[in-house]
Each structure stands twice: as C-alpha cells, then as structure tokens.
Image (cartoon, rainbow, N blue to C red):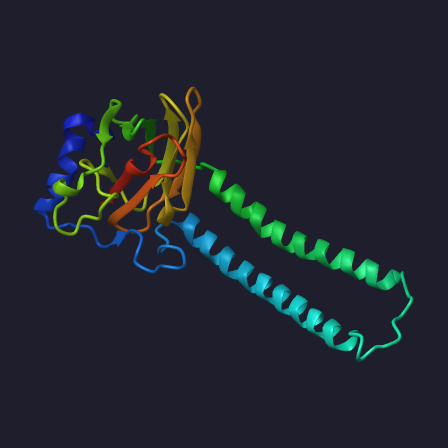
Length: 245
C-alpha cells in the first residue's frame, strides 16, 4: 500500500494524537566504553561475535604473557648459565604454525556468516535512499512517490531541551519498526558514509554508485548517527536522526 506524500507526512501527527512516542534514544553516552545498545538483529549479532572474540583474544594474550614470563625466569643468564644450542624443533614449529591457523579458521567461519547476513538483502518491505551532500543528507522514500526530505543539523541556539548537540536534525527520518528496510546510499559530490552505530550499519555513499544494505529496527525510539567519512570541512556536522515508530 502506498501512502503518497500527504499520507507520509501524516504519520508523525497520527502517532502523536494516539500518544505513541519514542521509547528510548540510542546515542553516545559520557564515558561509554562499549557499543551502543543493539537496535537491530544485525547489531545484536555483531555484539555477540565481538564478545566471543574478546574471550579468544584474552585467552591468547594471557597465554603469550605466561609463556614470556616463563621464558624470562627459566632461561635468563642466572638460571641457565649454559645456554642450549638447539636451533630446530619440528614439533614446536608444526604446533606454532597449525594452532594459529586453526584459531583463524574458527574466527573466519562465524565472521563470514555474519558478513553474509549483513549483505543479504532478503525480502525487503520498504526502501530508504540516503544521498550525501556537503554537508547534509537527503533521504528519499522510493516506495512513496520518491518523497524526499533534507536533514540538516540543528545549531546550538536551535536545540530544544533533550535534543543532543551535533546529532539532532531539523527533520527526522520516520521509519517503521519491525520492518525489513533496504538502504540505498549514494552521493552527489564526494564520498560520504551513512552510519548508525546502534543499527550496525556503516555504508559508504559514493558519487555515481548505489551501495546497498538492510536493517530491521527492533523497537520504536530515536536513533542517531553521523557521516563517518572525511568528506570536508563540515564532515562532523551532518548527523542522521531516525525516528522508529
């Protein structure tokens, strides 16, 4: 069903009348060390893979540290005044070649599955096209008569209470939650990058090229992102504000 331009404009007003509002906002937090809360299945998988990889990296780092400490104590000049003249050990060389290969294979399998999941745009229910400009975004709804809106960052004196500095825009991109959304990106000048951390999406917008990915927002809320490509002097001032309803 196509709503047309007028119907699309009515979405925020109808939601306000019935008391539907943003459940929570995904944005950077002071002293935040990890990822933002995952808002899509893609980002949830990325976080889970990162947590598993962190365990693998920690185990390897602790093993290497223990091995180095053992070597320092066991083979220093005081503990071992007569050094060994052995220069070759087949078993050790096979082990230190095979074990890293096995670890890399164990990492590669879920990594490739994750990359396939992120890039497999299956059964999209609607499309959003993002066009990067110096220095703002134009968002187009191809399914609704190519309705488009420009999203320009609010300056400090335009912010309302609760709106985050450098992230809020004059126009929010309204998208439905629990919907498979195809994202298309391009640009009309230089390379930009459409990135929403809580979505697990970071897709370059390149002049003369259409790039594609997808996401599915789990729940209503306000989600913020920014251009993550060095696109010029105002690179840091072209945010993205998504309102999922």
